[in-house]
Image (cartoon, rainbow, N blue to C red):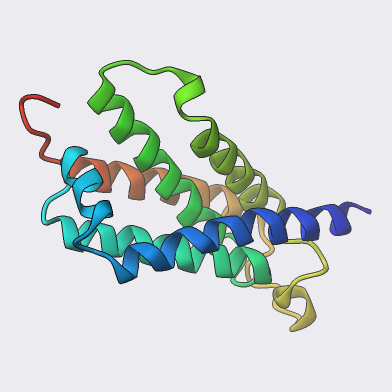
Length: 160
């Protein structure tokens, strides 16, 4: 039953995340650019594209259950960047302002640490390379390091 639950979670969460990426990729200088500029990411088109690619890739890998913790790692990193950068702009943290990001980050953490389950592309292809506890923990550390790097690239205006 655990594998069915993981499969359903991957389909729902991965599917929702998958829908967020392509609009960013298609509209790098539109409404997303204004949001990213307000968060201190310059040049905005580069960061909007990166976020769109991360969300698209994460969603697809999570839905498929492919490449072990890679998809959850991208999602966790993306959600950490979103949470921290918007909190920095607001100058305070209110969990109710970040319900979506925290929920997706929690799901990403769960999937990174548990693996995709037996109903997954990795399992169907017999890929066991990613089925190692140390790699799962390393992926979480990698996600946090990736988020820290992206956040270090911010150059917020004095007003934000």
